[in-house]
Length: 383
Ligand code: GDP
Ligand code: MN
Image (cartoon, helix red, strand yellow):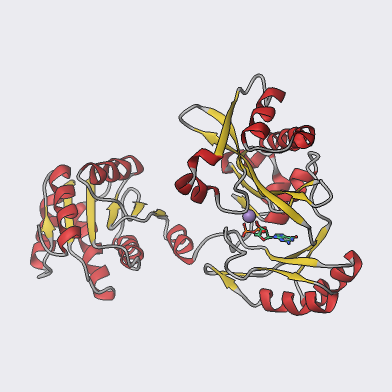
């Protein structure tokens, strides 16, 4: 579960991280009141659960409370990356000299939390990792020892922070790590952590992702869940009982079982392709669910071929085949479709597909199916 900027910053502040004074507004009038109470210039910030709000016009400075009201009205009417803006944070504007990145995530390879810092703050860390990986400094945190002073010093020196900030930087890093632990987060990030012209460090942005499996320990945080968190695709998938994660490859995957879905993605990669999604249609997939899944996959413009990999156990291949045909009645098939149906009622399933008159590519083994899908996605035709 993702938390909003204002929620994350409040949790960070509870662990000693300095944040700007500010309040949430849901109407332009409230924005005006908050801005006049804060006095002086403010920054009006859309609270939506996506990054890059600044670039999308969701963050604006306002010099007066009248301007804050006007700016808030504009931002409250926006939709950012498909998410409606329902709240804005009105923060006292900061005088920014430097922008630093500071974040903690779980590093699965090391089986530890790692803390990362970069002098390239304000930009998404993935972007820095691509363009300037050397600018990111990392320390691996031993869960029994915690974050040590020498580690925060390593980070501060590594990003070229002047020595007069070492102590305060260390304090903020410890606060961030404490918050990360206290709320069972999988990510806690300050981007940017700023240095002001008067020489103070301050977290002007905050982001937290909480481990859903730990939420029962934090009922008050569970209540913070934003119903607008999901994209319309993710919501449609959840409501249909599908596990769906959009990726950026060109081969749409429709698979029953999470393990088989992972294996399918691996084998697509192995043959030089890239999966467009992870999708587990679950056990005993009924026609309607298959149709919904196919609709979701084909709605993705990147998809150049669709690979069905169904292993019939509880799931019956004939049911899945009917689902595929039902889906074709609503969704026009614009890309090659490769179907591998094996297991319970596979013969009936294949017959249903063959009788349908649709031109489908079939394969018996997963390796052959994946190879055909990769070839089809490349040429846009049958393998
Ligand atoms: P994001 O785009 O969603 O990551 O939102 P951020 O809160 O990180 O804001 C984006 C950028 O807006 C920051 O990197 C800053 O450059 C700028 N910004 C944010 N708050 C302030 C502020 O109080 N004063 C000034 N001058 N700039 C700000
Ligand atoms: Mn940011």
